[in-house]
Image 1 (cartoon, rainbow, N blue to C red):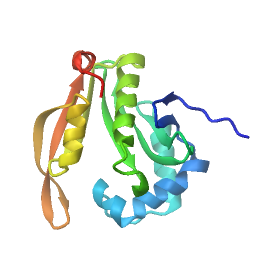
Image 2 (cartoon, rainbow, N blue to C red):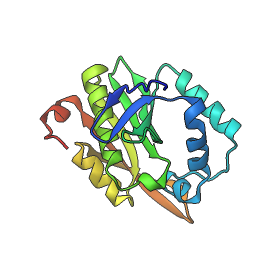
Image 3 (tube, helix red, strand yellow):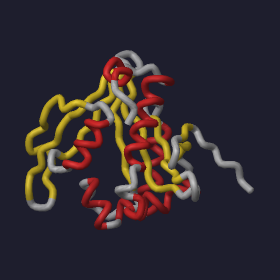
Length: 185
């Protein structure tokens, strides 16, 4: 039996390094599923080769940390999360998360993954600031990020065109000092 490399774990999920051989099908599905695509503001169909090339670039870039989110009880990969544009001088990064399998939505896995990435960001990478962008209309997402300690810092007005309308996005951020003051999620 193959050994599972759990980089960091919580009660119901763990994060491990992205592996093309086991994760490419999930990402290809998610990026082409109308239900998933709509939540992630994706608009073009993509081939497996395109997804593989995109992921190869993301993984190879030294300023990114990419993880696959796996359900602990089944070891099934359900999405990806991580940090983009890590700046070790400013000690800042951009957080992202995508649960590509809708069967695993609304089960608290996104909350757990966010918690793990914040712990990794502040305890291991010694970062000072994590930020993200979230659609203002994504009320559940905004509330979840606020529960994790993120604060709304501004609005990107009409930042994206989606489903025949312009969408505002919040810029949300959390600082190291705020993270350590926040109660457990």
